[in-house]
Image 1 (cartoon, one colour):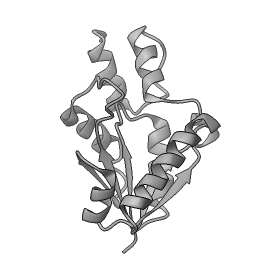
Image 2 (image 1 turned 90 degrees about the horizontal axis):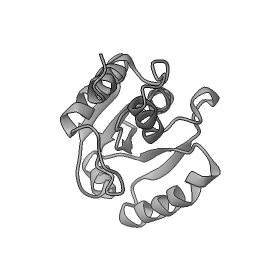
Image 3 (image 1 turned 90 degrees about the vertical axis):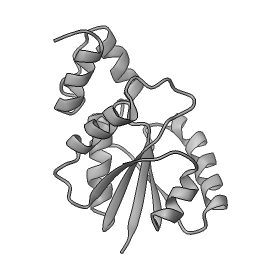
Image 4 (image 1 turned 45 degrees about the vertical axis):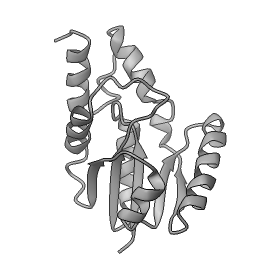
Length: 160
């Protein structure tokens, strides 16, 4: 069985993430979406909230499993017996960091290759940080995130 992991903070998950998961799930027998903390970011939503939003957003994909993890991605790759790590590249500016991480993960875990996927053009500009900023200022995000995320963001910023 060919298994891959798609790690991210998913704070929150966007339609760009969902698109990447759909396309990656066609390439592997099982895709593990792994929710982690990013030490460079302050999370808006808890692990439990992110888990709920991601699970509901991906519920129509039977070969996708969602987990929360802490620690090294290389260790998770070994535990889950994955042959690939899925990463999204939106722009050239993402490449340097992602390239460095891919090389480090290869050093730590020889069993998995990093597979870079580009987002669909309609989602290339999306990021979780941008979505949170727009939502904070009551901007239009309804068509950029799954419904469950839209409702959670509205509630997080005191809107009905």
